Structures are given as structure tokens and as C-alpha cells.
Length: 493
Image (cartoon, rainbow, N blue to C red):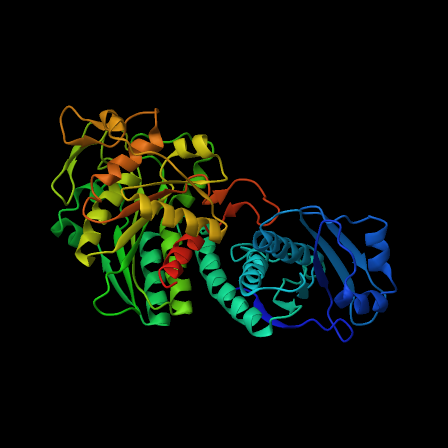
């Protein structure tokens, strides 16, 4: 569960909180609203700002202890000079709850001046993101070393009470989706199995009145999903194709389809990965986790749109039955695929899922996958690679990602690149080698997404982080939950 969130008008004269967080822009001054607070704390806030001991730079933090009953501590966090105030507030909110967790403060109030509905949503998302922590598999420290976890945060509004309340409620719903996706990503591969993802989907469906369908190995064999099953043939775990349906739009309305790669662990198969860092490959299911997190948020928001979420879940393991380089398999649309590299497995799973989604006659399909290391080389850990068959849809997804704070960058899908994935023995091969690896992987997927508008998100560099980002610790980021949800919300505007 995420922290409890609420909002109320900022009344600094009567405020009673163990921690008050003030998110302040560069060169901030004590305004009329904060003047009563400054009087209560003996003028320390005004002195700190006038002496420029705190300048409001991005991510600048100052902790002030107060001897005044009612406001025990002040935490100043800088918003900097950013022109995107919502993004800055979201970042400050995440830093606020992370700092509160380090201080062992269970409750806090957060103030960033007057807030619009969008800014209140951003504050809520930030507070939830910063408070999230994965401790369920850690032994609790001795009582004398324990610190209280952040359980409650109140957003103090400088105005716009009803708008702020709506923004907080929306942020809470999306934050729950982020938290679900991050928890699934953080769970180890021996716990978060394909069956575990299927059970999670069933729980989401039960909570929000959705329908769920789960296909196993036998059902996929009947569907002719030789591409997907080639990845699963090396593991004893049952592969799962999970389908969640949110039907809140008109009956005749074509659904939006969200598709995710759910490789619960990727060893590389016969083309095995290096041992160093292989433990991070539990995150190869972050695309699938993003779909489930987005469906959780969409259900909570009761968005009046038809949405279908699909997750292709399995593990990629080396064994005596594993698929081998040089093998040829047939996908459910009849195309033959030469397996060049068994570590290029995500596209093999997604190929059959992208064919399967046709039966829903989708208005648009967006897939997300930690697909290629090449995308990390091209874009680092800042932007998601975005490619697709419909330029207008690509731009719509890019816009949704920017609104969600999950920026993407478009890459070309020119036919010239197809030469790299031509096979001598089959219709197509699953790897074109190192050159343009992100593009050729997307072109491979395009061969199976040929009957509807389609966009592919390569989240290999953005779905998880191997370093502490200040706002969140090492581990899953929640990408692409925000992009998915913003895209679906955008279709209602």
C-alpha cells in the first residue's frame, strides 16, 4: 500500500505537524501565507532566505529544527529555475518523503504555494514515489535502530481547494499503479513467476470489475504460437499470456491495447549472458509490470474508455530442451523465424502477442519492453526509445510521455534497415547484430503488428536504475505506467 494522502487549506497559524516541507523556487522570499509560519518559528525562515543560506536551487535541501510547538521541523527543498513547475513539484515531493523516511518521521505536510489540479497531482505522485520502499524480504532491524516509515502526507493548498482535491485523488490512483509495477519489478525471479503475474492480474480484475483471460502452454500450442513457445521451451515454469479487459467505454468503441514483455528472468538462454550483473535481469518483466500497473490505475480512475492489457510472461533459461541458435520456428501468423541469438527473446514473445491482439480489433496498440541494450547506448537512462507504424500515434505517445514525466525520443523505422534482419533460411531472423539494434528489433515486431496503428516503447534504459537517483532508490522506476495512463486519459480529452 502507498502512503495515505490528503489535502487541505494552508493555515500556518494553526498547523500541527512533526515535519513541514516547503518546496521553494530559486530566490524565494517569505510570502503572505508563510509570514504567519515565520512568526511562529521565531523568524528563522525569513533570516535563512534573506541571508541566502538557502537559495532554492534544484534539489537543494536544508533541514531546520524548531523549538515551536506544532511545527517540530522544517525541510526546505529547492525547485530551481525549471519552467516545468509540475515536474519540479513532483521531484520535490519525492525528495520530501525520502528525506522524511531518513528522519524517521511518519507524517508530514507539504507546501508548494498555490497549486493547480495538475500540480496537485504531480505533488501526490512525487510523495508516493519517494515514500515507496521495498522491505518485505528484509529482516527488521533491532527496535532501537528502527525508524518510522512515512505513512501519511498532507498537501497544503494555497488556493483552489476542489481542484487540488481532484488532483490529489488522481495522483493517488496513478501512484498506486506505479507502486504495484515497482513492487512486481523488485520481486526476485523465484517469486515473481509467470503464474504470480497471472494471479496479480486476477486480483486487479476482481478489484475493478475487469475480465481476465490466461492462456498456458497448451492453449498457446493450439493458437500456433511457436515464436512465444520457443522461448518457453527451456523452462519448467508454465508460460502465461495474460489478457485484462477494462470495458468502460461504449460497447462499439474499439479498445486501446497495452502490451508488455513479461520475462520474469532472462538468462539469455543458450546465448547466455555474462554472470556479472545477471541478477538485474529480473527486471526484464518491467514492460509487463507496466501494463499491470497501468490497468490498476485505469481501474481506480474508472476512465470511460475500453482498454485491453496483454502480458506475455515466461522465463528464458538454458537447458537440454532450450531453443538453439540456428533453429527455425513459426509464429502464429505463419511467418518463419530464424533464431540467431536466443538472448533476443523478448521480440519472439511479443511477436505472437501482437498477432493475438488482432482479435480485439484495437484502435491503437502500444507495446513496452526492456528490449535492447542498444537503446541504452543510444539514449542512456533518460529517454525511452519510441518507434511505430503511425506517425500521428507516435507523436500522441510522445506527448503522453512528456506529460507523465517519462520522456521519449523517436527513432526511424526505415525500410533500409530491414536488410539487417533478412534470413537465408526463413522469412526473418530475430537479430540483425549490433548495428541499429533498437531499430531492427522494432522492425522485427512491426512484421507482426501489421493490421492496426502501433507504437513500440523500448524501455531498457528507463524501466529501472542501477544507481540511486535521489528521488528514488536503485531498482524499478515505474516506467511506463505513466505513459500508458496518460495516453489513455488523453483519449478522453
